[in-house]
Length: 618
Image 1 (cartoon, rainbow, N blue to C red):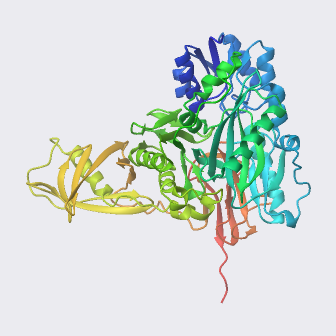
Image 2: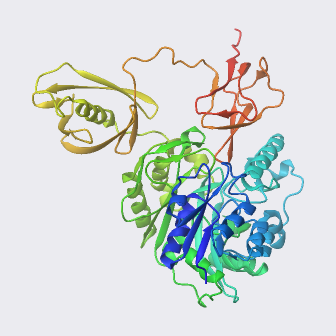
Image 3: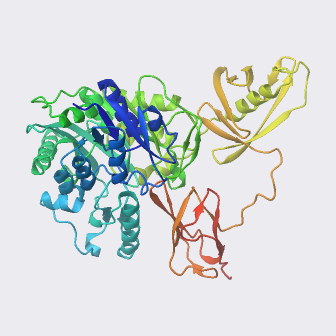
C-alpha cells in the first residue's frame, strides 16, 4: 500500500494529484526549482524538496535528482503527472530500480509508444519518407513528448528546412529529444481521443471520447466529453483501435489514444502513455477519479469488469497567461487575483499574489463545467468565465468566452482550423465603454481628503486611461448632490464599487487597483496614463521590440547591420515558456540596428532591431 507519494512535476497537475492523495490519506512530496520555491504546489505538499536551478533541463527534467529526492523524503511511489519526464522510459526504470512504485505504465509500454514514429509502425502505419510537393501540406512533429511543442505546418517545400530546424530545437528544449518526423496534415480534421484505463489483470476500460479540436499552435485550448456528432459506428471503431493499441504493448494505467477524424474516417496519431491535461472532462462524465484509479492500479487492485456509465456532458477551457491577438505571446508578472464562481471546477497551480515566470508553460488554470446536456455545459462554463476575476497579466479569457459562444462551436462543427479562420474576430476587443468612468470615480473617492465627496461645486475633472490598446479620456464633476458625468447618473461611488445608471438601467462596477497605474473594473483592465504624455516615449518606425520576456535562441544566418531584408523575413527567434517565437521584418528595407545576440535575456519592450523601410522612387 502506498503511504507517501512524490509528484515529479509542478503547478496545476501537482496540486491536482496532491488533492486526491489527501482524500486517500497518502502523504505528499513536492519537488521544486528555485523559481518555484514559493509556488503553490510546493506550499500545499506535506514535504518539498529543492531541485537547484530554474530551467527545466536543470530541474524537472533531471530524473536522477527526482529519484534522489523521493528517497530522501521517504516516498514509496512516484507520479510523473504530464509533460517533463512523464513519458520517459528511462525515468520509469530509474524509479523502479530504486525500489519505488511507478504510477504509470511499464517502461516497455512507454518505450514502444514514446516515439510517435515507432508507435505508428506498431499500428502498421508508415511515416512519410522524403517529402515532395505532392505530400503538402505536412505537419512536422516531435517524435517525443506532446503539448504542441516541436510542431510546424509546412505548406511550401522551401519552408521545410526551417520548420525542421525550429521543431528540433523546440523539441530538444522541452523533452530532451530533438527527433522529428513529417506526416500528412488534414486541414479540416477533428482531434478526437479515447481515454483508456488498464489494470495488471488484463482488463482494459475505454472511457468514452473527447473532442480536442480547438487548438493554438497544436496545443489544445478547449476540450469536451463526449465528442459531439460521432456516429455509433465511428465511436465503436475508435474504442476498438484504442484497446488494440493498449493490448499491443501490455498497457497498464491511464492513457490516451489520439486520432484525427475527417470525412467519417479515423487516422491514428499517437498514444499518450500518461494522464492528459484534459482528463477532468472524462472524470466529470464518468464520475471517476482517474488519479485515484491510477494509484489503485499501481497497488495491484483490479478494475471492475465494466467501466461506469457516462452521464451528461463536460467542457474544459485552459486559461493561459498569453495574448492571442499578439501571436499568442506568453505573459509574465504578478497574478493579483484568480477567482471563478461556484458551480464549476477550477484546477490551478496559482493563488492570488503568485508570480508567473518565464521558465514554464503559461497555463494558469483549467475551468471545467458539467451538465446534463452539451448546451447547458457550454452555457454554465461561459457564464463562469464571464464573471471570473482575473487580475494580472493578459490572459486568453476573452478568446475562450468568444469561442464557447461562436455558432460553429455551439453547433459542434469545429475542427483543428477553427482559430486559423476565426482568430481575428475572436480577439477583437470589446471593452466596457463605461469602465474608464467607473475607474475615475472610484479613484476620486479614494483620494478624497475626508473619504467622501466635497460638498462644493468644482471644475470638471479629467482622467486618461489605456484600455484594449486605445486611449480614453473621461470627464466628471463634483457637485453638492455628488459626482456627475454627461449622460450617466452616478448612483453610488466609493473606492471599490461604482453604480451607474445608463439609459435607465443600473450597472455595478467592482473596482480593484494594484500599484499606481493598474486598475480592473469588473473584468476590464485599464492602465492609468499620465495627464500629459511624455514626448520622449516615442518608438522609432521599424523598431522590433521583444513581445515577451525570454531568451534570444537564434539570429538569422548572416544577419548584420546594413543588410537588406524583405517584409515577413524571419530575423530573430525568442524562446519563452518552452516555446519558440519568430520575429520577422515588418517591412522591406535596410537593417539599421541589430541588438539581438544569441543567448541574450530580454524583457518585454526590449529593442531587438530596427528596419528602415525602403521608399519606392516615383
